[in-house]
Image (tube, rainbow, N blue to C red; front, side):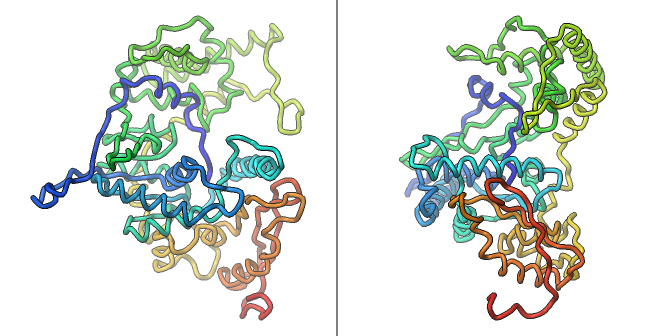
Length: 457
């Protein structure tokens, strides 16, 4: 799963604005209510499965280095889900599926960051706060969901768009940990997964974001929210493009909205969000606002170059990167980003036995296979082999001075590739895997069709 950054600084800003949240308090039915046949209140949730997985694993001090404590984690998942059910929550959990080719570079960066984390976790020194998700945690949680008859559905690729579209189409609250969902039009609301708070007495308090209140407090039309997110900064518009616009807004402290109820001093990001909103309020339309942003950034960029104050950005190799700014590139990036917040109605039907994915494999994507995949009984890594001829050997806690722990099992994977691809050796399978101290890729040939060798299985 690709961990998204979302709208930079927005979660912290909203956490400091308690008036923008509605509180739902639910508790289990009493024996008397059950005996009287009282119909409990039902709150329907569409949950991003990986957001739930990371929340459940990392909110408790499980040992992610030595064994992962899968049995204890499964019991924790079971207690959490049962508690939600007793309080009237109805759940649909949507999991990420295959890897979007456009996200491969981001995934490679995350995997290399994970190698650094594993290095720290496996040294003698204590590294407070360093954690990594064990490889079987996902299966432990999904098994529990199946046991409890919770509907689990695997998306074609990333789950977030499906979660949002299904929530809107079915009148459900969306549950995730992605600040992009604060921006989307979700009539039943959005609940960050860590805002589902379970008390010891079994009651649940859910804090749901109120988008309409946010718009009213910021004085901005709801239709401008995608541009607000894009102009503040998100996964789709780079900091290099936005920096001149942000600098053009000046450094004078703006008036904070009435919803801001905190004794803490506003951060640089908090102030930026208010400044950008104030800029957009003055624009008559979204197109006019994009033009105004690009123009302001262009003037600031030219002034910075003339004054010799334009920052120099460096790549991972430490070498200076070429200046990426142009007002045309900024305007194009803003428009592309805005489009990411539009909910595609097709995504609300994206969990059936049809798929937008394609494959060159002879087997294709038969309905029976896709149904097993959607239900979580056919692994997304295997579907990724069919769709992309790629296997992601995601990082694990291991001896980083030895070869990858995935290497000894490669003959088994080779046999699997041959079965899945029916011996089609026209193109190898790319294994994304740790090679020495860095995460990289290796080409693995597909063996001719036939029964696996006896020494393999």
